[in-house]
Length: 263
Image (cartoon, rainbow, N blue to C red; front, side, top):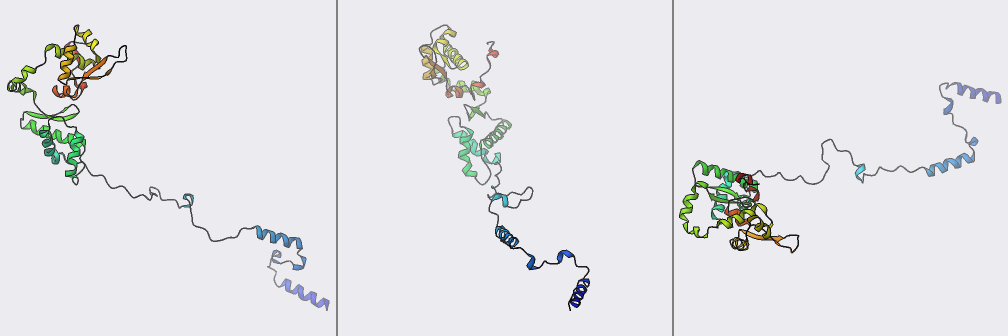
């Protein structure tokens, strides 16, 4: 009987010659208790595999394509083009004709912009382009005036070739003409400002208190501060009215002293 059973078992093993020996499971009776406990401990220590959570930070977000913006901000609206100078030129001219003093380009732009809000951007640069257009028109038509930058603003002024005619017409102003001494003192202040009274008198060689008082009454000279020296004497300088009277945009527009043979 035992011989027959052994023969049957050998026949079953030979019937499957291609089965690797590794696939033959060991009998449960040969598994030690310590191995079972170790396997259970490893199973408990292994983390459970759950569904993958969604990305919650910037590092988990998918990379954007090259040149693609990931910002959620809405795109800025396109900028409006500058307004056509010819469109605002008549308005600029109307403001300057009605003004009795130089008007800054920014102030003109602030007044005109609401009237042309849907036609383009009106800024100081647009005002200057309109002024250039107006001056070209004045020159082509032989007008006696043009728009000039004076004292930080713009103003309609007559051309130099009409100075003699205007001087004869306004003859009454000859009585208020500055004296030679006043013009001399005014020139010293204009080129040397800020300057003290002592420095003016040192250059002229004579007392200049009365002359300074006259220039201040005409609003051509003003006190600009005090010198950091003994006695803290007052400092004198020219005013905006001085620039307007002589048609200057700023002190830098004064002719250089070398033109008069001075240094």
